[in-house]
Amino acid sequence: MKPEANDLYISRMMKNVTRDQLWKAWTDPDILAKWWCPKPWTVKDVNIELRPGGASEMVMCGPNGEEMPQNGCIVYVKEKECIVFTDCMEKDWRPTGSSFMTAIITIKDCPQGVEYSATVKHKNAEDKKQHEEMGFHDGWGKVFEQLDEIAQGL
Image 1 (tube, rainbow, N blue to C red):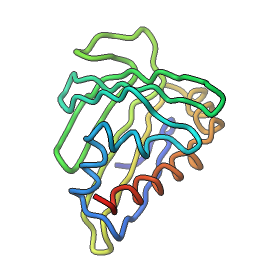
Image 2 (image 1 turned 45 degrees about the vertical axis):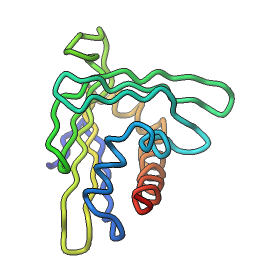
Image 3 (image 1 turned 45 degrees about the horizontal axis):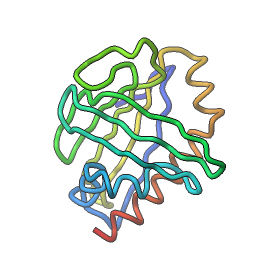
Image 4 (image 1 turned 30 degrees about the vertical axis):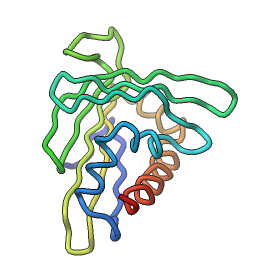
């Protein structure tokens, strides 16, 4: 998928994990909580229902006691290949009244390993810029490293 103007994109070639390992890391709430956000941040109360209309919920916790609920909805799932989720809806397609992003996560086999990528779509240039300034590339890059490390142990 080619990123469009208001998209952010990041991809990594993971040489020491399989799609099965990445899928398990994404779909098991206890495992996802170990890698989801860059340390020293943590995650609690993870609820992922891998079905269109299913919940995508968690609370990101900062080192100074910050809590950021991340409530959204699973839009699309293709086992071991793709997960799409958004914050413009909650479980069972309930509109939230606001939105910031829709993320498309893809996992595919390649001769060099497994290519893992994220395309994050924003409704406008301002939201994209805000996400970049929040540290999208560094943060998601660190999360990819954490995911790779956790998945290798599965």
